[in-house]
Image 1 (cartoon, helix red, strand yellow):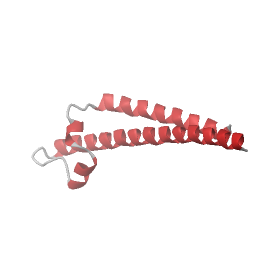
Image 2 (tube, rainbow, N blue to C red):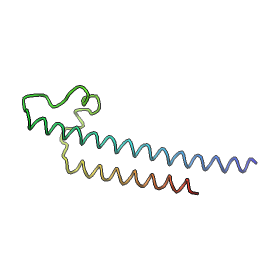
Image 3 (cartoon, rainbow, N blue to C red):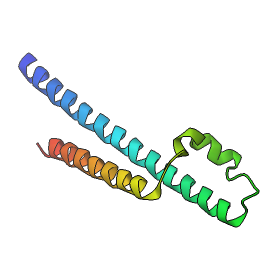
Image 4 (cartoon, helix red, strand yellow):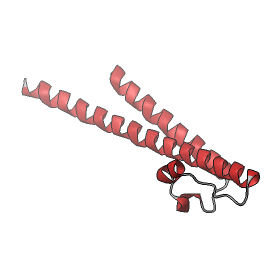
Length: 100
């Protein structure tokens, strides 16, 4: 019985690490998407009214202004694509563990 418990425990540990990877990759992807949305909102606000500040209270809470310095749309889209690929990989691994 102890051998079975040890085996089940090892599978649980592996699956927990797979789920942790899914969570981390998901959070990273969401963060990049929020950065892109904020960046595009800033760009639109700057084009429409350059005299007004591009942030409101809600966007300041979700994205630090320093994160947007030097940001360019193309590289950010590539980062989103890379993050999505990592999430896909971690989801596939987790699913394979479930199927085992």
